Image 1 (cartoon, rainbow, N blue to C red):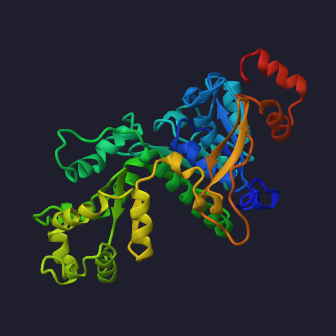
Image 2 (image 1 turned 45 degrees about the vertical axis):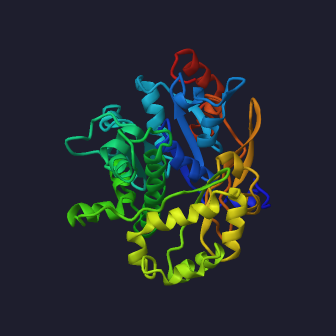
Image 3 (image 1 turned 30 degrees about the vertical axis):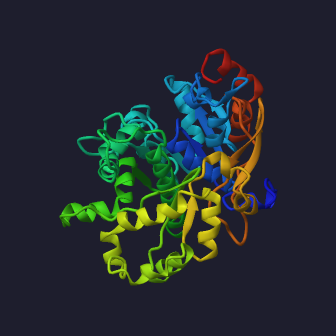
Length: 396
């Protein structure tokens, strides 16, 4: 297992300062990745705090859901409805490399915290806005959370059309649009920082979660323009005695290995299965044959048997199955962190570097925990200054 929380591993973005006005999921997911790379991320919250602080799983008042998205960041509380609070935010932005926000388009501009105003005093600023439909266009100001974007983007309809026997689209419990929007924002910010190193000038980034979802639908975008007149070939699960398997013998060699694995070498000569494009037309028949073999055996036994024959295959795991999975342990997929309620694991970024490693940092800030330290170190405010701001309800 790879050791985590080493100081040297977190220096890849160590010189960069990020002012994070985002909340809930897409923006925090992006800035969590930046914190994992060692960036100094200052999360600006309201007096109520990011609503994710109260989302389950909650243990003894502490949300591990929030922590998973925000570990490694500092937390300050500013009243952005007040002129003094907005001025403090502007002052902090002058020292920032990156500002990120995911308010509805127009909110930050109305607060005097838009890109034009902040970049006027910090030309090197990279300013990233994440929104449902983008900053411009007829849908720009529509409220949009991940389930809405799954529906709006065609993603849910595509998945619905790939199922049999359903009367309505699938329920939404995994927020793909948020994670994907955060990942696109993260990569766009790195590109803008690289451009800044060459040009000396920052820029504004406009990330549309709707367009992020559309980018996943590679085949569907093309098929919409060039209809095929038949349903797309689908990989389907196979039933085992205690669960399900996904078997994907896509190449000719894989298929031949697959036939040997189920002791039916004659299938290689069956006219229904001799070539990939023919097999696709008869895939349900092939899977029916396969299930006669898999349904009498445990999923783990099937998985091991197919893999031993070189057939791409996996049983259907739950997330809990993976917490102590040998591959996850070897890769250091999970990192142990600790909040006020105790220790737990969060995922590390899925990428590795030869000259360092992105790791979840073991800091989960309480609401406003770093207000005084940040205002003192970044803006030079005295303890008395900060006390007065607290008394006036401007700083929390």
